[in-house]
Structures are given as C-alpha cells and as structure tokens.
Amino acid sequence: MLLAIDTATETMSIALHDGDALAAEITLRAGRRHSALLAPLIKQTMTQAEVSLDDLSALAVSVGPGSYTGTRIGVALAKGMAAPRDLPLAPVTTLETVLAAQAPRQDDPPLVATVSAGRNRVIWAEYRCEFAAWVEWRAPRISDWHALLATCDHPVRLSGEISPAGLAAIGLAREAGARIDLAPAAQRIRRAGCLAEVAWRRLRESAGRAFPADRVMPVYLQGPA
Image (cartoon, rainbow, N blue to C red; front, side, top):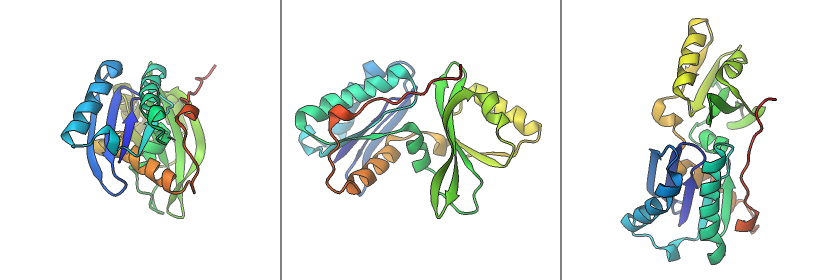
C-alpha cells in the first residue's frame, strides 16, 4: 500500500493506493492549515480504510513547485514517516500530478497545466500530445495570469488550479478572441490519487533503484526579476 501526500498549495490531498486500485482519497481546500490538518487527516483516513503503518510499502509526496511553506510541510512529514521504516519515498511534481488527470489524445490542442503560486501568480507549463503522451513544449515558469494568457496566441486547453483572478482574466481573454478551453472543474483539481498513479509507475519502472527519503527535496521556481 502506498500513501500519497500533496500539500504544495492551498489544496491538500492524501490517498491510499495499492498499485491496482485507489483504497481511499480525500481532497480539500485547506488554506494555510496544512500543519494542523495533515497528520490527523492521514490517521483518520488510514483508520477508516483499515490500513495500518505496517501495511505501507511506499510513500509518495508532492515536491512542488508551489507554496514554499505548504510544500515543506508535506515533504517533512513524508520523510519522517518513510525514513524510520526504510520505505521508498517517490517525489512527484505538482505539474506531473495535473498531467496525470489529462488523458492525451492526438487531436487535442496544447495543454497548459497550472498551479497556484499565490499573490495572483501562477506556475505553468505547456505540453503537446505526441504519440499518446504529453511532451513538454514550454518549460515550467512562474508569472502573473496576464503574462501567461499573452502567450495563448493559439488554441489551448487549461487545466489545474485557477484562482478567481485567473478565471476573470481568462474570461476577458476569451472576450478578446483568445481560443481557450477550460477542463471541467472536477478534472482541474490536483488529486493525490493521480499523484499515487505517477508514483506507482515510477516505482515499477525503477528496475530496483531505491527512492531514499533523505534525497527528496522540495522544488521551487523563482519568479521573474
């Protein structure tokens, strides 16, 4: 059983996944309450799913980019759980988790995956479908919404966290003629179940390579100067 933890932004999510099926998942808007909510929520979820610490064979954690404090809380707790038990800890980025919920199709427009960065900023990257897989077209960066939308001079699909300010900016861009499609709201939520799917795939493809907890570090992006 794998425990997946994501506290990289105001949305917090945890999941239990046995490699074949999702055993439990909870996702909520935690704001800045990660440190108070995370450990009790994990304990409650494991109890209700009848999973004990001894049942865990691996952990996965979101390493960002996202909120500095939120990311560190999740990474620290995951390392604290994995290291004493010598369990593998698989790092997964926030943008990888967004992509995991988007099934690529060859006729789809480019996908812009987004993660909230606070202060009306957004972390984003653009991907295109090649041979039924998402391929990075524009590298991850951090900007405000207007700078992001200024690059949308071609049809795109947006998915991931979109703040109220972002939704307003997208509405104005559409009125000005931008061809922007929004993924459904339920599909845009960054879920730990998707994070767990990425982690399990990584563990299976590792060919025996270890995922030591002490090597897992948060990923941060610098904003524009």
